[in-house]
Length: 121
Image (cartoon, rainbow, N blue to C red; front, side, top):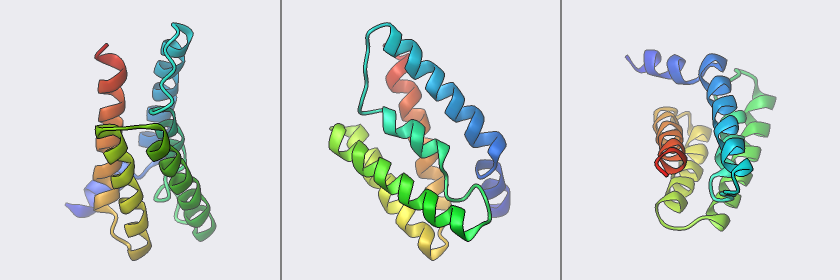
């Protein structure tokens, strides 16, 4: 069961369509005059998931990018969304110890929060 969850959420067919969809929705809101700098880093975080490719160079470079974007998210957000970024940072650090399930849950919750934040207005 754990492998099924892992391979479902850690593939290009999950992350990149979600990233394109997130970017599209963000751009639509941006064109309409709504700039949400608190949500923008989530697009980048979904673009560079460390678990996407089984390559050590990819893992560490995307981990650094995702941590930097999560830090930017902490700086530019407040309330619940700030906690999403903090949880993402912790889950990204846990990837160093091969704890993948927490990252998968955190990235999924962050995507749901992203959609609810933009589409519920």
